[in-house]
Length: 406
Image 1 (tube, rainbow, N blue to C red):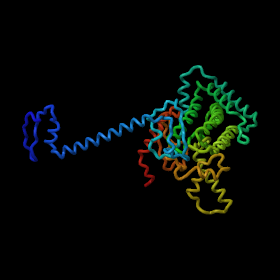
Image 2: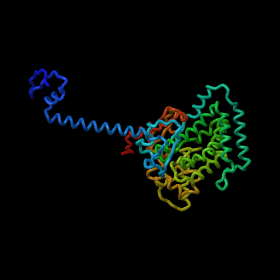
Image 3: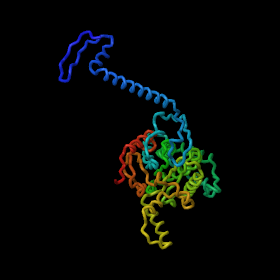
Image 4: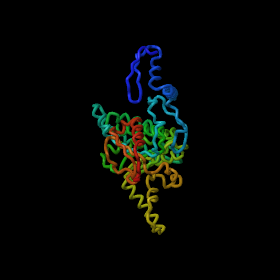
């Protein structure tokens, strides 16, 4: 109802001014301004918006009741589809979105930098740390115990040293180095296991990590002894983890001869054991005693030797070189099997390479394979990395425009 009315003349018509009462004044105003047809259109738009928001609220409530521990088989894009469950007690945020994260990364590479610096920062906080001599003595005892079984870790795929032995020695070493800068290396290994699980959840089919370069052999002897002992015990300890989570582990080394014999044999046995895992949820390439430059030299030498023996004088092709990259330490005995490791969807070239600790260099890592890889540099040190850092890196990659020279 109109209580009073005035009007103002405009070029296209008259606009009524109202003092609205409490009885439908808004409707009368709309009718005067828009006409009956405009009022009908407004009503339709209002109903559409009401239905839309009802659907949004319903979907939001539905997603809130999806347990984080479940894993959708259909959403997995790794080597083989398989159902998975994750530890409900890890405290992961339901909304962190790794499972449904939009990205096209099938091969992720990581330069795990900052373990030693992280350990040194923690070391400064403690005064009562284990003497270096005691740690060295323990590492020597491990070597002695291994030598007592003739430096042979695997025979007929059966460990001479039990899982209990590895767990016990690993726990003892962890206690010894807990308040020293060496503990940064141990924490880096533990972080790798967490990160692999996150990659599985994010549907990443292959992960390549830079664990130890050939230049790292220039570090102090004491640190090298601790590192090699950690490698040996850690690789023995995670054998059951590879079966539990379907992890195929490949070791890539351009100078394996520099590794202690018991460490090299452990790596070979772990890789051979993980070849039996089926289905595989992820392939993890661990680069130990590795150099990107040496990898290219070795690849050309292998090709040259084959050409020399067969009298082949053709030019070397790019595909021929690529096939020699990321060769594992046991691949010579599994050539046909390993041809299936790399495919068009899971190439040797990582789509994304992460480097931690704030350094912005490649450090002789995957020099041939990274031609068009995208890089993401993270300021955190490797042991500090979280699943949210992985999520952010994948989201940034998703937003990038990869032209690949086009």
